[in-house]
Image (cartoon, rainbow, N blue to C red; front, side, top):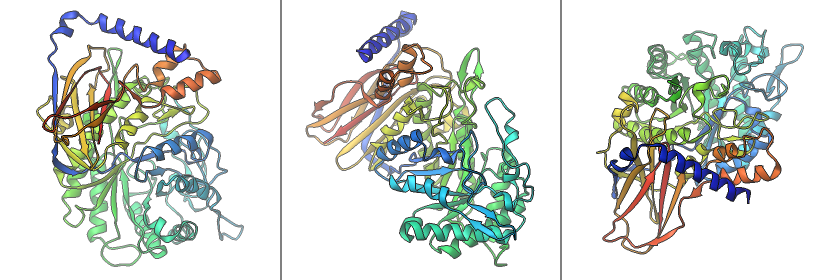
Length: 566
């Protein structure tokens, strides 16, 4: 009954909103036609979206962390990769914002290493049990190895100076050989616990954003640490995959300097360990972030900033002939830079709870495929630095996928991606935006109404979004999706939708009066509202000459997914 009343409330609100738009603008809007040709294959539909990460590793095995990881594993047919900070940080395992610890390395009174993999194993066990795989981040510095061990732990909270977090864990080791032995022991232990074949499927990487205060050493000291780390990983398991350097967005000139210096070193520099030329590098990592702000009382995103980070990195990698085909993992790929900076103290982050985050995600991932294809590089994955935050206020506005165990709208975009298999196919680029215009201008003129499509042996998927950087109310857009290249046989069409009325726990929570402590019944309603919902009942269709047209009204910041199954 509660769900029914909630739906009625939301439909009434939507009608009022629509009526608030002048009739002339609604009646004169020409339909947008999206042409999909399933017969024109672009490339394999790699699941670049199946990568997630977060600062707080101890959330992994907590109640809501386990619940969310289970859901994430279920909506992907292949493995989901997970990247977490602080896997070697000293401490008692207490979870806190932008903090985590495992106590993997300490020393006895004589300065001898003491290894304890209990918490690290607890984290990785949680992944492996669900068929997930770690991007094993080798960092940060254990207190006993830090060249500046005090102060070591921060107690940051939203609103505090972000620079307060960079303490003893961010410094170089006082003994590079002890550091290398720690890495060696960790990889050997992992092989012993999980088996060689399993660990060969992981990605081992060094540090995070060493070109800013996450690393208190110099660029050369990071490169030296990489040489010691890569050597230790390969000594423990020669077939292991190791990479870096996880620098911030390369559209920043200082980040470019780091990325190029690192790639120069691994290709032609003198190795700090072996004295020979070059260092093992199996994949390349860097970050890409957007930059939202408040404009005239509303949130304005900046997708172009994120796209320029991506593209500059692709351009740099492509300039190295021996590295161009190496896998690239965008270690953090997000609308902005601070997952733990909540909406209440950072109002520009008000996009996170509702449909703006989901439409941005759909539109931006589609352009990641296009940018990589244009540069001829091998984009393996783009990590959404978004997970969940335990014991926080409901819908506080963190960059997360769920709140208190309830899925937010953005998670449903990933459920849509999970149904896209086979090959990425042609969507005609005669619409308002192609990937170049988004990169160069962001989405500040017309709306970006566009699509991403795939086809496998027995299904096809078409994702359609109506995105704009400015989160202001406008009339729904009439959209025609023309799909060619379907089999000329009877098939089922499923139409899923993320908008204010569908797949949206946030709007339902607000309709409840935004309860600070929802009741058990309310939580059950919210959990149901957080799942991906059908816009209409599934229907049988028979394409005529392999073609069919689907017409819809698509609200601003909404995402539709058409799933054809035969």
